[in-house]
Length: 139
Length: 139
DNA sequence: TATGTATGTTAGCATCTGCTAACATTATTG
DNA sequence: CAATAATGTTAGCAGATGCTAACATACATA
Image 1 (cartoon, protein in one colour):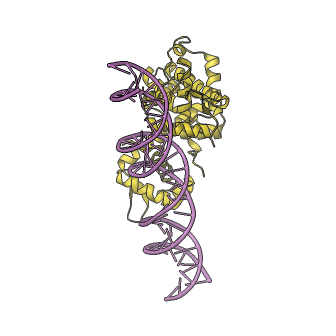
Image 2 (cartoon, rainbow over the protein chains, first blue to last red; image 1 turned 90 degrees about the horizontal axis):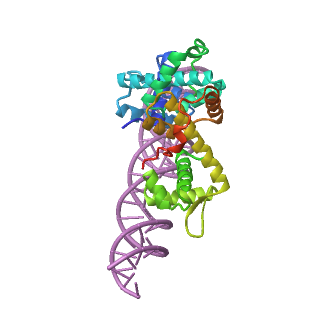
Image 3 (cartoon, rainbow over the protein chains, first blue to last red; image 1 turned 180 degrees about the horizontal axis):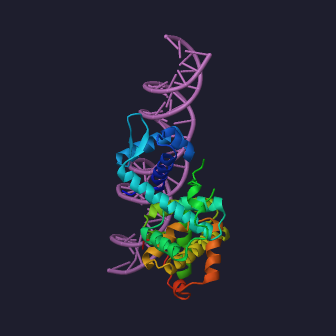
């Protein structure tokens, strides 16, 4: 079945961490999300069972092809939604936090409509967002 | 603590049903949400403990003052979000469904920003939405 | 009024997903 | 190399929230 918010957050976090550093450990994921090691351990097993994550020969966590597709999809929602909220005048921290929740509940149709809208009217600060990283995870 | 999506949906449903018919029964709430009678029964006890709901002398479910304030707040999010999505060109059914999930995850700040935006630029179909009721509940 | 249906409640199960405690394994370092 | 630290896993708890089964009560009509 479709992932819950929780699973999507793990995938997104792995994706973001992988871009900063190719060798992601479970403990790093937990730290980023503010979760305990056992919570991450179990989540990784679940995501492995779903074919979204794997472990390499050294024990580092990697996204599978399918996992990467999903993670990118979620991350794109995150960046676009954050930007839209910033454009609406929402304060940076709140924009990121809200985007981080909303990204899991928006349908493809609605997200596409928002993207189209942004493409048409543009964003007020086109260059600022991507650079800063920050998915809104707890720490 | 703050209500979860589930509790908010019960409140909103009670609110909407109360406007159609002042005497709302647990079974009506369950029917509207697609939940079983026991689920509603427990939820009502929880909401009573939180002082958001009460039962009148005939057993009909009523919102307390506090419950009404919350329910209205959530319902306003629902209607405004639905309208915004419609304005963005999202199909009616999807707009309502998305609004029904997003309404629980948007911060006050973001919602205010959206409202301000709508107030400034207006809505493409100002009169159509309110009339139709429909919270997006299952049935 | 008696009987059957509708409604509400209680008890207990299932799933998700966080947690801690305890243990195993691996890495580091004196 | 031996001791300590860091990391990962297993086991089991907790709470939210859906469910069914079974029961109690209320209602409504033959």
